[in-house]
Image (cartoon, rainbow, N blue to C red; front, side, top):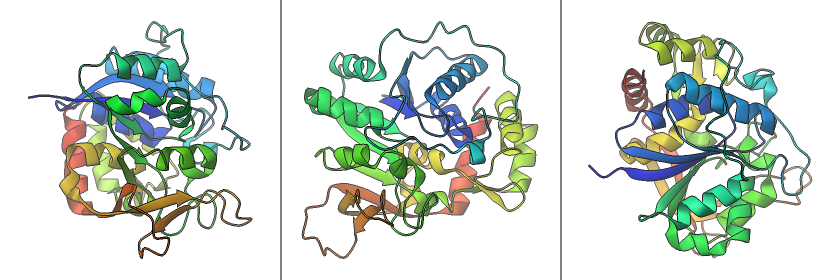
Length: 306
């Protein structure tokens, strides 16, 4: 079986940790590089968290540290959701940093993409700062990028402001560059994340499933992306789910742009479902997900981990 070659750009983050686990233990994905970006918590913390996770998983994937702040906007974080460290709730061993590359994430991505014999799929599950910088500094990489499958945005309401989803709100200028890049884009946004739920009975099963399940269980006890008792939202795992089981999703091809200047709507993904803007489609937007089948896939995926 030919594996899909991917680069994950991430800001762990509890749901990022879960998405990384699924991707790293998948038989269908070849994670070639992991890059980090300021987002859920600051760059130093998300990079440290990534290295801790790789050591825990016993996986040797190179890591490159990326942007420590948005292109223009002031930094925001989601420590209220993920805890002060970004991964509160579990005690990890100290990583030895041997996987951390001595170069910026953008340069590391450039080399990996340009030296690859097959096209690479980019999987950003945090703010899009690194991806925007890559496309602006090295536009030639577009020729060897298969598609961008991202977690971010919303067709309706937001989760950090009335209309904006966190990953897009955190760096709207970067998001606009990515969505208008001309590359094939899949947007797995807030709409599907709200329905990709792990319930209390699932968390209890995870606790005794394996080491990864036990670790995730303890992270979930601190996670405020939903409620431990009423269901936790697996936003970032939706991007991985789309790569592996796209039939879980209802999608539409449409035009998406990012609002930069709205006093009340900055960071909103303007998803033109009715064609008002008379623009060609630039994204495949996930509108809905089969929640029951997602949960089944999710549990089976964690069962494959160590």
